[in-house]
Image (cartoon, rainbow, N blue to C red; front, top):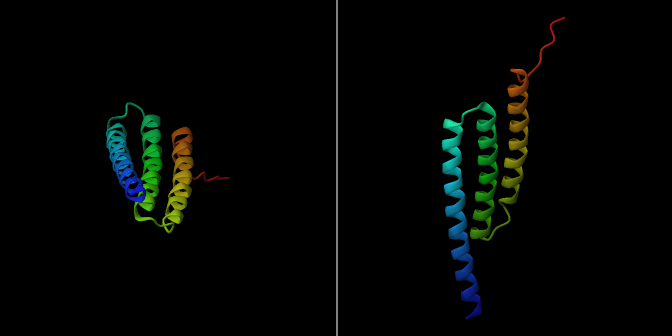
Length: 101
């Protein structure tokens, strides 16, 4: 009896969390397209990546597996590299500096 109540509670919390993250991603996609400035768009893209990490984490909890932890780490690493590239592009206008001596 207690186990079934815990499972039902977990299912409800996961459903609410999935819906909340999905709504957040939808709003961030709108901000990405309509953002008044490029830094606003960059922050929205970064936050979409963080929400993707949350979705994979929630899916891992729902599927009762730890095999998706590597996917969360991979998304985080790629997100960090992408954020650095976007920040450098916004600051200097280029991502890779080429010194022409």
